[in-house]
Length: 514
Image 1 (cartoon, one colour):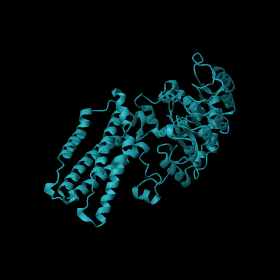
Image 2 (cartoon, helix red, strand yellow; image 1 turned 90 degrees about the vertical axis):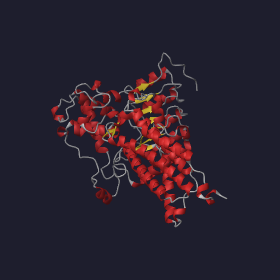
Image 3 (cartoon, helix red, strand yellow; image 1 turned 135 degrees about the vertical axis):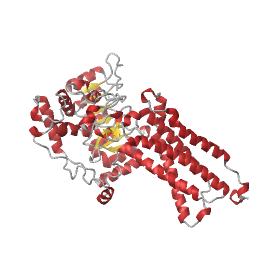
Image 4 (tube, helix red, strand yellow; image 1 turned 180 degrees about the vertical axis):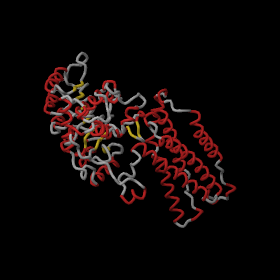
């Protein structure tokens, strides 16, 4: 006889599963007590390494439990009643194991990077929610095993399953809020739904510019710069390094490394120190994949801090040097050239294209801000899987790209040629790719380029000499290439304002012939 036809008393009881289930629940419950408070500065790298797998693993239990929930709903409303339970324990077993793995990885991520999230209470709630879901999943699995063994009524199992799914949904929402901000799901919600939820219907937009003399330096000039470049990662609910930059008081208060700025001393202010680090430095800000701050924006920030960083003074209260007046004029001109509010947000066509490409290339595309049509693309999640054919699929969004990172991919000069329509591109990383001088020929069609990284590529003296035709180039990274010290020196003479980082001439190998 098949197992399903055997009397309940003759079926094998799941004592072993129960034993290990109780052991797992005990381990999860005691984990936080044993670990104590987070001490991220003392954590070994292996903790952070394993913790970084949390975003990868967490989707497994979500998918499995969602599928099981729909299966049970189909059984309930399909008319098969109490006798129907899924024929195999394996799907739930897989979901439980992945839930435990996700909870442990999340716990390690929390302890290795607690300071990156500031005082956000959602982070801790997400941690405990993940542990609660894993425990509930194990208990549900044990009840399911006993229900199958005893051929019992599946009501209790289903109740626990739906309860576990509810915990999973709530915890998943908290995770999305931590990563994308609290308004991620509701930002573009229809007005009736926003009204029902009690959400402000107003969306941030461009504020008409004031006359120069009436502009308060911090709220009208400095704060918008920080909003564009920094606040995405340093705001309420997402304060990397416990540093918030969305208000003046929080900026002065600072984070893990002390005050964000020191009035009167730009060179000692942490926000300026981080901005002026080399692009390849892990502490450089903005981080990899985000457009660097413009030279005029940095000049204004440093001048304001050196002048005392007063949050209320207007331009009329300062003696503004000529070079700062020039930078302010450029920033004002750029602001005026931006599209009006009605068109300065991503339209439905663009959002649809980004959504489709995000399904094909997860984690690669992101908007600079919810109200900006500009995008960044990073191939870091793909690495060796991205080739010319795959990159060609980005055609619909190329005109909106402002920063592109193609490091360590299989792209060639063919992909760079397709960037001709990326007219707003400012930052391009081609580190350790097969691009050659032919790529430079294509880049000359992008006059807005400000930063290019050719580290580990095959470009030569002849190729980089042509970069002198890029008027806005501010940074060029070109070490470990066939380019000679003489070639770098010649280019530096043509681009005196460009920061060129190459091999140390004393250590550089002779340039290879082409």
